[in-house]
Image 1: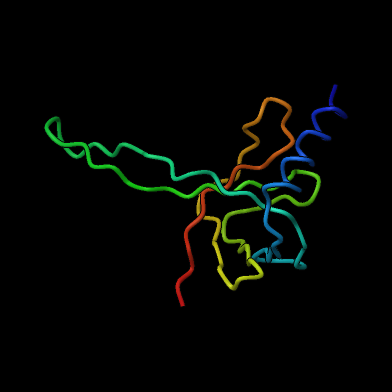
Image 2: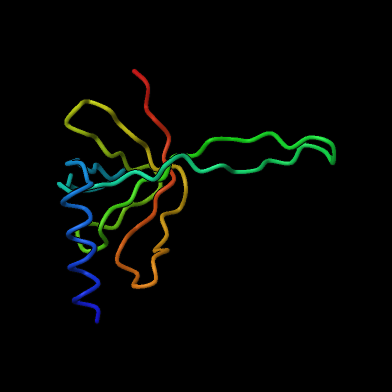
Length: 107
């Protein structure tokens, strides 16, 4: 079953993914395919009367390509760069895809 799950993940990344380079805080760069989630709404409660919404960007990378860490940077061929700001997690049922909370690096 794991091999079938991996084939499904591969097909999804090949069709919907973007080529990127991952640069860890320490170590060598690695080529990978990434996908982005649609913006995720995160409720941030300030008081019982207000609940502003913050926007979060999630980036996904196949677990067999690399193991991302906080502080690492994903660079796209377009020049866009994203820094990992939250602890990456394997959130899919088969544990084949890292989910990374990232911030855009401006400039």
